[in-house]
Image 1: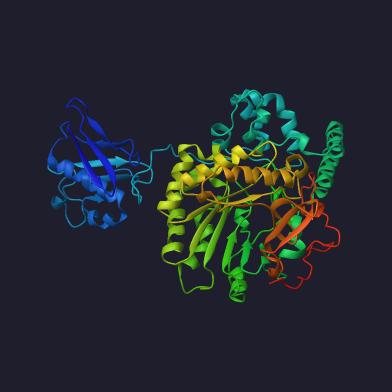
Image 2: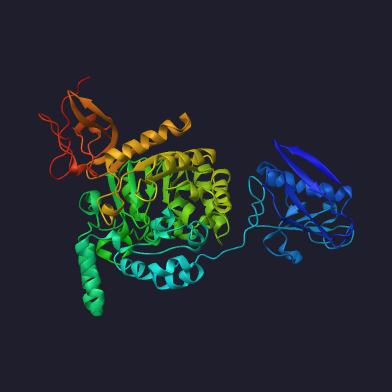
Length: 571
């Protein structure tokens, strides 16, 4: 009682149940259509007309070019028939329907098969059914409830709560329940625990003693004052973000323009995340201090600025995380770009996001998941712009769940967006070549392009997470040697510092002296880009201002960190 249908290199099996069963399942051998129920008022579902209806559905769901051929009669959403709005209804005899597709749809001669599922029509078929989960942030006040579900957290509650007064804390149910290994011998050593749950070890000895003393005294006002003092010492805006990168226009409260071709925008509604990384270099965005926060309240002033700067080709939406925004808010920035005649010099839209790790349901089962996928698709197809999802991915485990794989599938095959991966190398999280090689190989197998390995910025808990640049270069090189050429799109280790993006290209010996070989991947002065330079080797150096010049040479930046004039070319 089964037939095979080959269509676009996919094999679909239509299975008929024994007569005693009231319904059957429609599945595919490659898992694209799964667990979809076909409901009928009769037990016998073997008639050719019913098979034809199901085959029509499979064809249309697997190839978006076929959808119109089966709409609105054979394949349609039909709320008027009294079926739930998230189901698809396939009828055995479309010719019996009236012009509105209603008349005989429930008659015995024209059975309606209801196929339920999340995001029923997609360019690549039905998604696996997922329960519709509502995102609910886990705050510092709710960590006791996590400890009830995951007792391994209980001994560390004091540590987390007190450290969380300085470093912002937020987690997502998906991340806590599906990515952290709560059964490992010491949960504090699990990279995913370490990535989200703060610890007092992230503070230096003086700051820790100061915080614990203030907490023990029980004076709330004094505690708040101490927390503010500690935060001020943690360099809340590294690399001249406030002083050097922000345009001097009152309306541009959430825009940075450091490199000529790229403008960063921080939409106000996107200045939070589904969860917070403990090492976040933009932690100052999340502590409720407007003086430290970048936030663009509306899009028009951004567009006015871009109209005056035709050298800009790229917009990078960042935060926070723009994907926490509802589609309606996101559309304020993206909808105009569906018109190819609007700011035609803008060619590339990048969206920096951690949502694939913290809440992949944003692209699959959130209430407006379909709308955000459609918006991205329209910017690509109608606006003719390149859409790049700049995914923060630290570890292969983030790519292991069915939920994230479904999100990746929708982004690539329905929104037609490219996904690129980037992450800092962090001690205790991903500071091994094996972790990076596995991550890159997994990404490429999923169609994700490895893009950057970054170094820990000089802010927040840098001293707790930093990896010296010599070790970072060895990790990068050893990982790259164990990967195919497809992975060698990645660059790094790179420092996003005051003068620009500085890559540690190698460690060599020059005239008997061990040196770092470095180059600018980006620079405030474009003449420096791609040009190698040298610095004394130092196995403890973690940031660009730890570097020292070779005898008789100078580094390409001055004491303020700004680029020096470029010397005459050797070409």
